[in-house]
Length: 116
Image 1 (cartoon, helix red, strand yellow):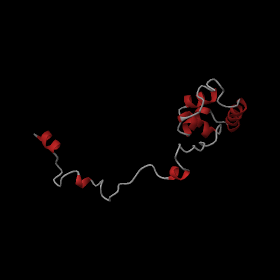
Image 2: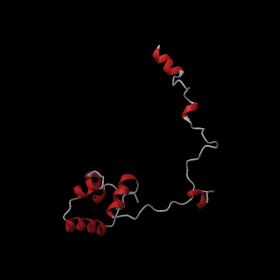
Image 3: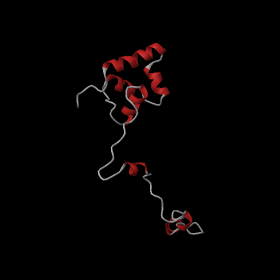
Image 4: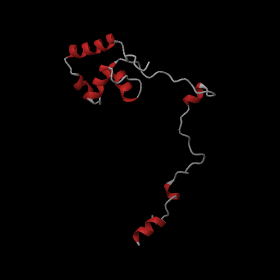
């Protein structure tokens, strides 16, 4: 799998033919979609396999790959667990209130030492 081609040559040929048909360069397309042209060329040439990260995003945008595949739940985790937000809210409202951290005068021991 390490040296296997990332995409079918026919798929790459279709993408390149579409650029020619539209009269658009790969570099223009890359810039219009927020990618560096060299990164797009790397995906098209097979130097970047497009398996994850930026290469994957480029391959999806080019239509070489489908949107991200569904991730299997971890052992002991149900599918319902995956839909829950990963950020847990504080048990009490106002726990993150900045007024509890900085005294009313706005000075702290550190700011007092800096002034001296």
